Length: 147
Image (tube, rainbow, N blue to C red; front, side, top):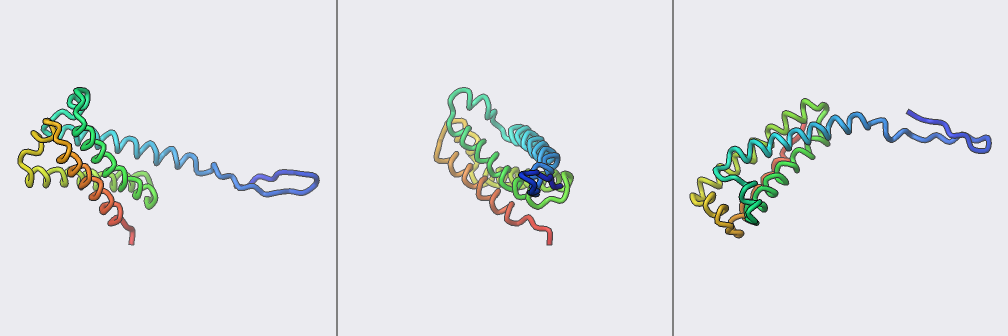
């Protein structure tokens, strides 16, 4: 949509850059909803209470939770850029959620004391888990395509 701007008898055409604002709000709201659902599912799925640990000053729990959130947000951002609808975004968000839960499950299989290590504030384990969550999110985002 273009608007005409009259200036001393000459018309300049300015594009309406905000015409996509309704789509912005739709996709942003869907992403926020997906992030909220992911946060709830992830914290329900883990055997420890991340928020209680964080409130007690457990840095490792905060690092792991933020790593998982970033690892989830990266593919959601990729899905926003590629999706043709909010429903497609929601579907890819569910895929991203599944990948993050799967990564955490695999890490728990390899590191049997993972929950204890996180509760005990062992930062080295937290950095590893957070890093692998982010890496899986990057790979997840790269794998999303509509070919």
